[in-house]
Length: 202
Length: 318
Image 1 (cartoon, rainbow over the protein chains, first blue to last red):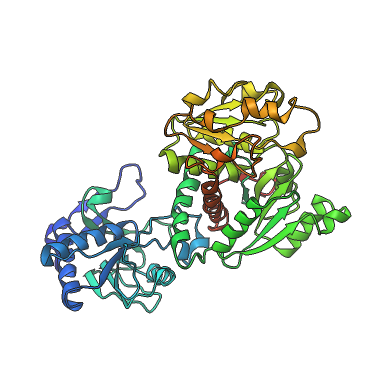
Image 2 (cartoon, rainbow over the protein chains, first blue to last red; image 1 turned 180 degrees about the horizontal axis):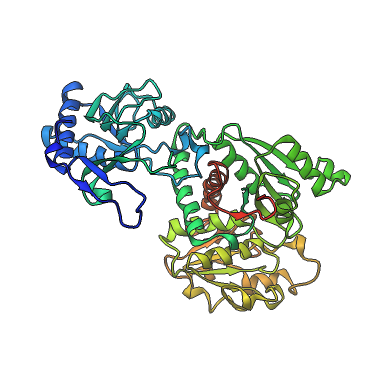
């Protein structure tokens, strides 16, 4: 862990959930911002200008990250990329392990995805199962020229042969640990938190 | 724990909103080249219809197929029911075949409740109309249509006009719309108004014309000739003149108000052709929305490890 360590903070858990362990910040707001700026540049670099790229965020936090990346790329290159969202709930392989969940929004930009370079955006890459579901969902919507993956945090422990093309931070974790991404849009502030899982969850 | 959708009176505002929000997302599938989701792969949905139906059965079948469930259609005509098989024996047959959900329409009020609670089957039961009692998915699709046309239901005024006495659509709508914060006014001749209507969460009137100018939506009910065993009104012409919606009456509605009908229509009796085909009519929209709403109900009942909506089965939860 190199970036963000100078601002290590111990955030106390919400008072009502005393059982929850204290979460440690591994990335603060400016580190999250730097990581996104770097990913935006990497996307532009690796796709030679990203002319046919479409950013698709996986709700909820991946969707916010995708629109931020879209704005960053517009600021750097003056290029307005199509940005959308892709809900994968109905394609998950663990649907029957939990009660039926509310659905997120799928918003495919007007130009569609056929023949485009789709960059999927999510907050945390863990087992890889969400991304597998996203690839299935994408297959029902169209046939992209290629699909790439951008994540803010890669915490390891893959259960499927899936890797990210753009990673904000590689975060080695233990299975019993939990990673939380907080974004200003949903949680009031940007941070990546690491803590110990509550007993009995997952 | 198994749950069912038997009556809109069992749905909390949160449950109903979850169904409508889920339906709104699922409606977008209809615009895609591949109108199918893999969610209910390997699940079996049985359409058990003891009464005639076109749109409800086709709508449930389409909904289940769009979620990749296997669908078995069972109608009383041409089955062993016409040889005198009881609901119980039919249910036991379905149980032996391993249905995950049974969508049931029955001519007896309480038919769906009996099927859900008698301990014959373990499947989730969805009421697709039981006698003159309830038709919850119709009310949900009406609420969905109203919400998408009017923005929200809170404080909206909805008139339900016609054969309220025999209408399961009216009963389901009164409960659901009240739960979602709308104000419902029932309009019917005294002979077609249910006895205990003053205990329902709505107001009522025997006259249509004074009610119309205040409404955000008017729902015309079908005159159900097949359930009428006596004379409820002198002539159809008189009924049509006092309670039918024709162009002149429609002009009395506020500018933004919509006209609904659950179908099938008696054109010229409770609604004139001109009104039914006007831009303010939501009748075909209601059919489209029916598929999305039924997809939402099937997904929320069958999609997870346990249902997210509906009523608990007291006897089944052992």
